[in-house]
Length: 61
Image (cartoon, rainbow, N blue to C red):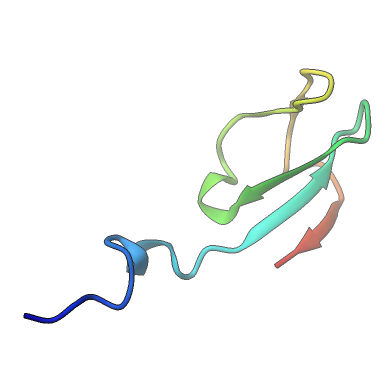
């Protein structure tokens, strides 16, 4: 029997990229991953919806 070197499902997520964006209303930074880019995101600081296609990205990993 062999032991897997990665968690189950690892292959599905190994190519994800992360993006950080500041809320246009309060400036709080939010991070999402590339598979979440087209989903709705809400700022945890002020509750305003963040449109990642309209904001300036502050970081990318």
